Length: 498
Image 1: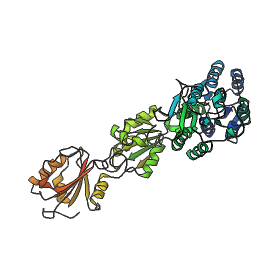
Image 2 (image 1 turned 120 degrees about the vertical axis):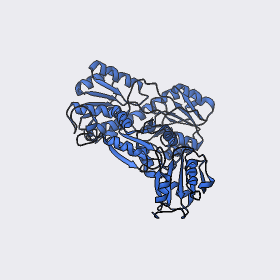
Image 3 (image 1 turned 180 degrees about the horizontal axis):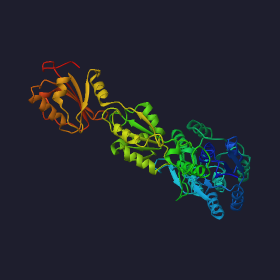
């Protein structure tokens, strides 16, 4: 008997089987090939049922195992198996969830052709007589072999499984045209194989990141090979792997297993192997090019990224394909994550440095409000960015250890008082007229010789640095993304050199 039955020897199925076993629940995985069985072999807490089951066989299997939950993690193209699993679960009155693999957005690209069926793909291959590397698996092979003009052109890459190899030989493909290899395959391996068979075409399914889809496309691009992609069958209902893990946690809680008891909550997510983490990330100046390597690594590991719209747009190249939310206030981040427990690691991005008048400080305080001895729900990591002060001084070719930092961004600032206390002052500015107003104020106070170094849109391609004295820059307008260093000339009644 099993707490959970998982259908599918896919990467998702293996990941969920491992997660369930780690939570202390018993898992039985049903796979169709010896290859799938081998991939799960030796996994502690996981039993494996190997063999092809029809609907009646599935019903008998489920009556024997009596699971609280069935997870359909079969391949995205295994539509018949999905229908049979759902019907068997309905007949046996067992809850069933379907795990969907993340899809790649279909983009128009030269030499990539998208079709709905294997038959459409086969017809397209009639455009010329070049060799074809077929990377769709063995099930569609018969369709391609039905076309006489393809029989001597096809090289098929299939699983190294005796049943699969027998099916291929029955379809009429054997010898050197049958390539039995176990994935996943790197881009370099795909390139080597395409060159080895002198392929002019690659035929594949849209198998997603876990199926090595991008590695196939990139290899084809570099080998100048045309690609035919067979689209996935449309599925309306399903959940992500992260959401499926929450379902497994619920089973563990209901059956009193694992470290957590009772309903799944934020308090026991960490104890049950789903640690909730929030990364507060300073992205530096400009368009994200000043992210530190440490911050970028953290960002790439997040499964949801939050921030102001401008911030999310700036780091767009690094978060493509990730879920995004236009939130950055701590309380809003907290409430959203309460409502979406399927997301284990969230990133929140802020401009500049996290420690200098950043929204990060306010978010941190609000996120800490959910803590305490009984409700430590987040593990918070802070990744500082390059500050505006550091960036501006780098542009000016000077150190900043002798500069007093302050801000006029969104708050009153006594600039005259600061310059009387400190010879050199750095200010963040908030409005286009701030610098002009400050220079006018200094001039009217007899401090028109104060030296001014202003940086506008630092980190952007159109960044600009302006220098001069306060008397010359009265009334100047800048971009709102600006900062300034003010330096007394030593003749204005300084109190100290702090």
